[in-house]
Image 1 (spheres, rainbow, N blue to C red):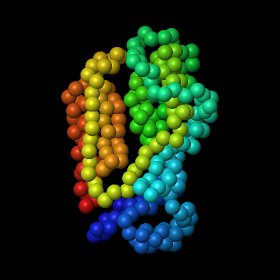
Image 2 (cartoon, one colour):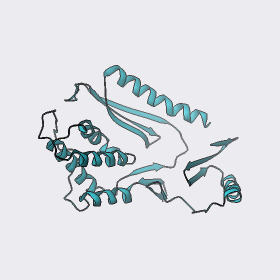
Image 3 (spheres, helix red, strand yellow):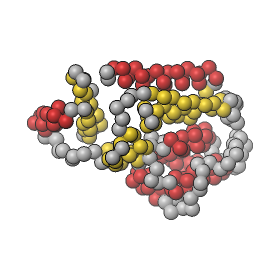
Image 4 (cartoon, helix red, strand yellow):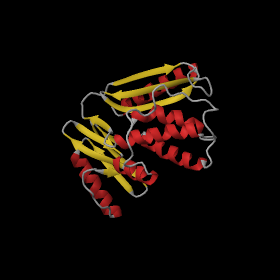
Length: 234
Protein backbone atom coordinates (compact mmCIF):
# COMPACT_ATOMS: atom_id res chain seq x y z
CA UNK A 1 0.00 0.00 0.00
CA UNK A 2 1.44 3.36 -1.08
CA UNK A 3 -0.48 6.54 -0.23
CA UNK A 4 0.59 9.63 -2.16
CA UNK A 5 -1.32 12.76 -1.28
CA UNK A 6 -4.94 11.98 -2.12
CA UNK A 7 -3.96 9.03 -4.32
CA UNK A 8 -3.52 5.41 -3.26
CA UNK A 9 -1.86 2.39 -4.90
CA UNK A 10 -2.28 -1.11 -3.45
CA UNK A 11 -0.22 -4.21 -4.33
CA UNK A 12 -1.40 -7.69 -3.31
CA UNK A 13 1.17 -10.49 -3.66
CA UNK A 14 0.55 -14.22 -3.23
CA UNK A 15 3.49 -16.43 -4.30
CA UNK A 16 3.83 -15.54 -8.02
CA UNK A 17 0.44 -13.80 -8.32
CA UNK A 18 0.35 -10.00 -8.17
CA UNK A 19 -2.76 -7.83 -8.04
CA UNK A 20 -2.52 -4.06 -8.55
CA UNK A 21 -5.24 -1.52 -7.85
CA UNK A 22 -5.45 2.13 -6.94
CA UNK A 23 -6.99 5.51 -7.61
CA UNK A 24 -4.43 6.75 -10.15
CA UNK A 25 -4.06 4.82 -13.41
CA UNK A 26 -0.80 6.62 -14.29
CA UNK A 27 0.86 5.44 -11.07
CA UNK A 28 -0.40 1.87 -11.66
CA UNK A 29 1.07 1.86 -15.18
CA UNK A 30 4.38 3.19 -13.86
CA UNK A 31 4.47 0.48 -11.20
CA UNK A 32 3.70 -2.24 -13.77
CA UNK A 33 6.55 -0.96 -15.95
CA UNK A 34 8.93 -1.02 -12.98
CA UNK A 35 7.93 -4.57 -12.03
CA UNK A 36 8.26 -5.77 -15.60
CA UNK A 37 11.71 -4.19 -15.90
CA UNK A 38 12.84 -5.76 -12.62
CA UNK A 39 11.18 -9.20 -12.77
CA UNK A 40 9.72 -9.70 -16.25
CA UNK A 41 6.04 -9.96 -15.24
CA UNK A 42 3.16 -10.76 -17.59
CA UNK A 43 0.25 -8.31 -17.67
CA UNK A 44 -3.03 -10.26 -17.76
CA UNK A 45 -5.17 -7.14 -18.02
CA UNK A 46 -8.27 -6.31 -16.00
CA UNK A 47 -8.86 -8.65 -13.06
CA UNK A 48 -11.22 -11.55 -13.84
CA UNK A 49 -9.89 -14.45 -11.75
CA UNK A 50 -7.64 -14.51 -8.68
CA UNK A 51 -7.01 -17.40 -6.27
CA UNK A 52 -10.36 -19.07 -6.96
CA UNK A 53 -12.36 -15.82 -6.97
CA UNK A 54 -14.16 -14.82 -10.16
CA UNK A 55 -14.55 -11.08 -10.70
CA UNK A 56 -17.20 -9.56 -12.97
CA UNK A 57 -17.12 -5.83 -13.67
CA UNK A 58 -20.60 -4.31 -13.73
CA UNK A 59 -21.83 -0.73 -14.27
CA UNK A 60 -22.60 -0.30 -10.55
CA UNK A 61 -19.66 -2.22 -9.07
CA UNK A 62 -17.89 -5.59 -8.95
CA UNK A 63 -19.50 -8.99 -8.56
CA UNK A 64 -17.37 -11.50 -6.66
CA UNK A 65 -18.10 -15.25 -6.83
CA UNK A 66 -16.43 -18.65 -6.43
CA UNK A 67 -18.63 -20.38 -9.00
CA UNK A 68 -15.93 -22.42 -10.73
CA UNK A 69 -14.31 -23.61 -7.49
CA UNK A 70 -17.69 -24.46 -5.97
CA UNK A 71 -18.84 -26.23 -9.12
CA UNK A 72 -15.70 -28.39 -9.22
CA UNK A 73 -16.14 -29.31 -5.55
CA UNK A 74 -19.81 -30.22 -5.99
CA UNK A 75 -18.91 -32.37 -8.99
CA UNK A 76 -16.26 -34.13 -6.88
CA UNK A 77 -18.84 -34.76 -4.14
CA UNK A 78 -21.53 -35.92 -6.59
CA UNK A 79 -23.92 -33.04 -5.81
CA UNK A 80 -23.52 -30.88 -8.91
CA UNK A 81 -26.90 -31.82 -10.40
CA UNK A 82 -28.57 -32.84 -7.15
CA UNK A 83 -32.13 -31.80 -6.36
CA UNK A 84 -31.83 -28.37 -4.77
CA UNK A 85 -33.12 -27.38 -1.33
CA UNK A 86 -34.62 -23.95 -0.64
CA UNK A 87 -32.82 -23.23 2.65
CA UNK A 88 -29.24 -23.87 3.89
CA UNK A 89 -30.59 -25.93 6.82
CA UNK A 90 -33.90 -27.65 7.31
CA UNK A 91 -36.46 -25.53 9.17
CA UNK A 92 -36.35 -25.83 12.98
CA UNK A 93 -33.20 -27.93 12.68
CA UNK A 94 -31.79 -28.83 16.12
CA UNK A 95 -28.89 -31.14 16.94
CA UNK A 96 -27.76 -32.94 20.07
CA UNK A 97 -24.70 -35.06 20.76
CA UNK A 98 -26.85 -38.20 20.52
CA UNK A 99 -28.50 -37.40 17.17
CA UNK A 100 -28.11 -40.26 14.68
CA UNK A 101 -25.42 -42.95 14.60
CA UNK A 102 -21.67 -42.45 14.29
CA UNK A 103 -20.35 -42.32 10.74
CA UNK A 104 -18.17 -45.20 9.65
CA UNK A 105 -15.94 -42.87 7.59
CA UNK A 106 -15.83 -39.47 9.37
CA UNK A 107 -13.00 -38.25 7.10
CA UNK A 108 -15.52 -37.72 4.30
CA UNK A 109 -17.60 -35.43 6.54
CA UNK A 110 -14.51 -33.44 7.54
CA UNK A 111 -13.44 -33.02 3.91
CA UNK A 112 -16.84 -31.55 3.08
CA UNK A 113 -16.58 -29.14 6.02
CA UNK A 114 -13.14 -27.89 4.92
CA UNK A 115 -14.55 -27.07 1.48
CA UNK A 116 -17.63 -25.36 2.90
CA UNK A 117 -15.53 -23.10 5.12
CA UNK A 118 -13.78 -21.75 2.03
CA UNK A 119 -17.10 -21.07 0.26
CA UNK A 120 -18.30 -18.61 2.91
CA UNK A 121 -15.73 -16.09 1.62
CA UNK A 122 -18.37 -15.04 -0.92
CA UNK A 123 -21.49 -16.72 0.50
CA UNK A 124 -22.59 -15.09 3.75
CA UNK A 125 -25.99 -16.81 3.34
CA UNK A 126 -24.45 -20.16 4.36
CA UNK A 127 -22.29 -18.82 7.20
CA UNK A 128 -24.63 -19.88 10.01
CA UNK A 129 -25.26 -23.32 8.52
CA UNK A 130 -21.53 -23.99 8.10
CA UNK A 131 -20.87 -22.86 11.68
CA UNK A 132 -23.60 -25.18 12.95
CA UNK A 133 -22.44 -28.38 11.25
CA UNK A 134 -18.75 -27.58 11.88
CA UNK A 135 -19.27 -28.19 15.62
CA UNK A 136 -19.45 -31.96 15.13
CA UNK A 137 -16.27 -32.73 13.20
CA UNK A 138 -14.78 -34.93 15.93
CA UNK A 139 -17.70 -37.36 16.18
CA UNK A 140 -20.01 -36.76 13.19
CA UNK A 141 -23.18 -38.82 12.93
CA UNK A 142 -25.72 -39.64 10.24
CA UNK A 143 -27.92 -36.71 11.32
CA UNK A 144 -25.11 -34.22 10.79
CA UNK A 145 -24.31 -35.78 7.41
CA UNK A 146 -27.96 -35.39 6.40
CA UNK A 147 -27.76 -31.69 7.32
CA UNK A 148 -24.51 -31.32 5.40
CA UNK A 149 -26.00 -32.92 2.28
CA UNK A 150 -29.02 -30.62 2.62
CA UNK A 151 -26.62 -27.67 2.58
CA UNK A 152 -24.75 -29.02 -0.45
CA UNK A 153 -28.05 -29.28 -2.35
CA UNK A 154 -28.82 -25.68 -1.42
CA UNK A 155 -25.44 -24.50 -2.73
CA UNK A 156 -25.91 -26.55 -5.90
CA UNK A 157 -29.16 -24.73 -6.60
CA UNK A 158 -27.69 -21.27 -5.95
CA UNK A 159 -24.34 -21.47 -7.74
CA UNK A 160 -24.60 -17.98 -9.23
CA UNK A 161 -24.82 -16.19 -5.89
CA UNK A 162 -21.93 -14.05 -4.69
CA UNK A 163 -21.08 -10.56 -3.48
CA UNK A 164 -21.87 -7.29 -5.18
CA UNK A 165 -19.35 -4.66 -4.11
CA UNK A 166 -20.79 -1.35 -5.24
CA UNK A 167 -18.60 1.50 -6.40
CA UNK A 168 -19.40 4.44 -4.11
CA UNK A 169 -17.61 7.56 -2.93
CA UNK A 170 -18.61 7.24 0.74
CA UNK A 171 -16.78 5.03 3.24
CA UNK A 172 -19.53 4.68 5.83
CA UNK A 173 -19.35 1.56 7.97
CA UNK A 174 -22.50 -0.03 9.36
CA UNK A 175 -22.53 -3.12 11.58
CA UNK A 176 -25.45 -5.38 12.46
CA UNK A 177 -25.34 -8.17 15.01
CA UNK A 178 -27.73 -10.58 16.67
CA UNK A 179 -27.51 -13.28 19.31
CA UNK A 180 -29.48 -16.40 19.98
CA UNK A 181 -28.88 -16.73 23.70
CA UNK A 182 -27.76 -20.16 24.98
CA UNK A 183 -29.09 -21.75 21.79
CA UNK A 184 -26.19 -24.10 21.13
CA UNK A 185 -27.45 -27.59 22.10
CA UNK A 186 -23.89 -28.85 22.55
CA UNK A 187 -22.29 -26.17 24.76
CA UNK A 188 -25.37 -24.11 25.80
CA UNK A 189 -23.46 -20.97 24.83
CA UNK A 190 -24.82 -18.13 22.75
CA UNK A 191 -24.55 -18.03 18.98
CA UNK A 192 -23.73 -14.55 17.69
CA UNK A 193 -23.90 -13.38 14.10
CA UNK A 194 -22.70 -10.12 12.65
CA UNK A 195 -22.30 -8.43 9.28
CA UNK A 196 -20.37 -5.26 8.49
CA UNK A 197 -21.27 -3.13 5.47
CA UNK A 198 -19.08 -0.60 3.70
CA UNK A 199 -21.84 1.70 2.49
CA UNK A 200 -24.20 -1.04 1.19
CA UNK A 201 -21.61 -3.73 0.41
CA UNK A 202 -20.88 -6.57 2.89
CA UNK A 203 -17.17 -6.73 3.75
CA UNK A 204 -17.13 -8.92 6.86
CA UNK A 205 -19.52 -11.41 8.46
CA UNK A 206 -19.42 -14.34 10.85
CA UNK A 207 -21.51 -16.73 12.89
CA UNK A 208 -19.87 -18.14 16.00
CA UNK A 209 -20.52 -19.56 19.45
CA UNK A 210 -19.59 -17.13 22.20
CA UNK A 211 -20.36 -16.52 25.84
CA UNK A 212 -22.21 -13.24 26.31
CA UNK A 213 -19.40 -10.92 27.32
CA UNK A 214 -16.94 -12.36 24.81
CA UNK A 215 -19.54 -11.89 22.11
CA UNK A 216 -19.86 -8.21 23.00
CA UNK A 217 -16.10 -7.70 22.84
CA UNK A 218 -15.98 -9.50 19.51
CA UNK A 219 -18.59 -7.18 17.99
CA UNK A 220 -16.87 -4.06 19.29
CA UNK A 221 -13.43 -5.16 18.11
CA UNK A 222 -14.70 -6.20 14.68
CA UNK A 223 -16.42 -2.87 14.13
CA UNK A 224 -13.51 -0.72 15.33
CA UNK A 225 -10.80 -2.49 13.32
CA UNK A 226 -12.14 -1.57 9.84
CA UNK A 227 -12.64 2.03 10.99
CA UNK A 228 -8.99 2.25 12.00
CA UNK A 229 -7.96 0.77 8.64
CA UNK A 230 -10.08 3.28 6.71
CA UNK A 231 -8.68 6.12 8.81
CA UNK A 232 -5.13 5.02 7.93
CA UNK A 233 -6.05 5.19 4.24
CA UNK A 234 -7.13 8.79 4.63
